[in-house]
Image 1 (cartoon, one colour):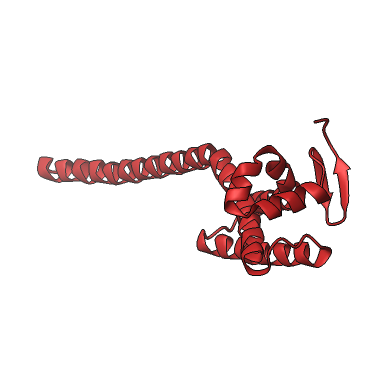
Image 2 (cartoon, rainbow, N blue to C red; image 1 turned 180 degrees about the vertical axis):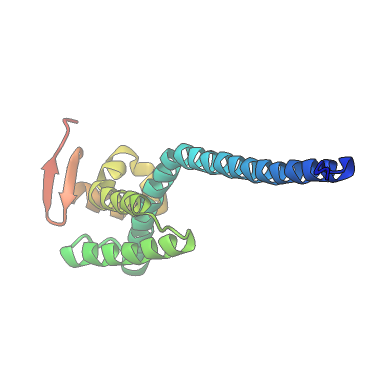
Length: 168
């Protein structure tokens, strides 16, 4: 008895093998595309990190500026320890609002927000010394005079102590 398969049966087996290979190559192609997409997303994340860090730094400084402006609009040009603490608390509240509004979840962006906040808290008086007319327009001339009486340019102001960090 002859065990040779009929040509149509043989062709159907070849077609089944080719279809299975096609399914495997489709899966392999899908895996390659997923890997490409993942690499693309990682590259975009790497490229966006420096601008996002700078944005968070500026937003942290802006939160402290808003805290200082809100306190000034409410209480005037007080520069005592309690007033600066209140400004910091208002700024921290603004910082958390910004953090929640922007869905900041990564620690590196939290650090940039905090660093911007602390820099503005301790060094804003240097900006007042650099641009007194701008700050007089935003706050008042009395505020600028009070800041200039209490602080020195080129220092870090920690509530009641000015620490020089550069020669002016």
